Image (cartoon, rainbow, N blue to C red; front, side):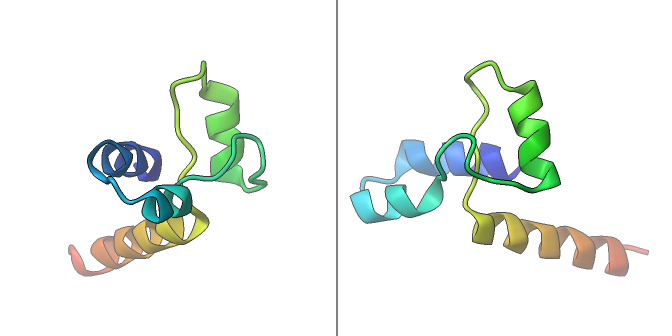
Amino acid sequence: MAGYITKRLMKTTKCETCLMSLQTIYGTLSNSAADLVNLKTKGFLTHSNHYLFKLLESLELNFMKHAE
């Protein structure tokens, strides 16, 4: 999900500083989610910024906590 959001933001954002802060370089992340992207990618999947990933992870956990 974070990669999808990153890709969509990169298509609509014109600010170079914003674009550079959104994406990380392929193969430089070392967490389980990045490992899955590295295994599944054929050049089309995008790594998101660590902070964007953590924000979305927090939103998902809070949604699951309060959805009942």
